Image 1 (tube, rainbow, N blue to C red):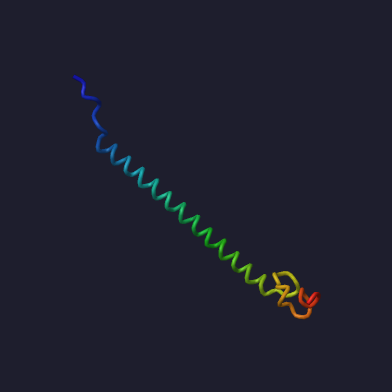
Image 2 (cartoon, helix red, strand yellow):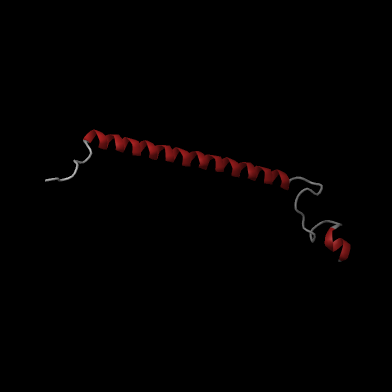
Length: 77
């Protein structure tokens, strides 16, 4: 009679469990690294936006209706 092969030994099960745990840990570290990089990128973008907003002389967005003297209303209104 043939009952099939015996299941994995205790040592093999422990080795597989350890391998799964290390893979999960590596996955979590990669996720945390990407999250930190995104956080830094967002912070850099926000800081750049604040700097651009404070610039004078036409580098940023300006409303044509609220510009003093010039702009749409000053030219055509």
